[in-house]
Length: 228
Image 1 (cartoon, one colour):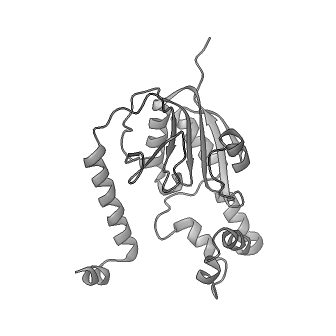
Image 2 (cartoon, one colour):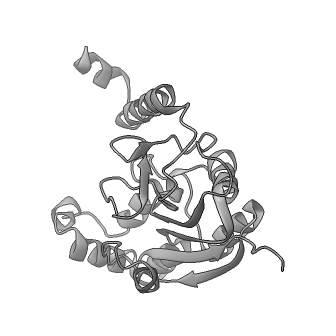
Image 3 (cartoon, helix red, strand yellow):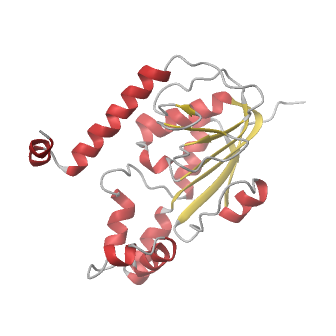
């Protein structure tokens, strides 16, 4: 049966079906949770395997609280004073998923809360193609993931641009600063500014180092403070 499925359905389609199945399972298992521990007011969404102490680490599965980020978030309004997400938002379609998620994050944040996001930088990737045909992107990737030297052996480095745009169908949007700042503004955040990983870790040193500034856009924004 497994071999038959492989012969009939593309790898990308199988991955999409698997992802949708996990999302459905998470909705069924955890869709009715409406509270978080009062002592946990920092949200780390799309954590993957990178659980950070002192934060509520959420993802589709195997997290502190499994959550489908495409649905209404399972918390009352005004719960969090800090939100961090690294290399997650590019997996969300802009209008159907990312903007609704940012509005939901805005809802569950306290006044004056801060949000820190990172994502592959559209401007960097386009500039890389113009200046080096993606060779600098590949060099950066190999410093962090040495196996990529073998993956890309004999392949022109311009394929790194394809990978960052698509990642086997997993990436839905690449964003530059203007687009991400616009999305945050649409969701009700203010004071969007370009930052970097070091500023994130200066603020929250418990986050592990990624060393991904070369390809990444880091942005910090806030929710509006209460007027005096």
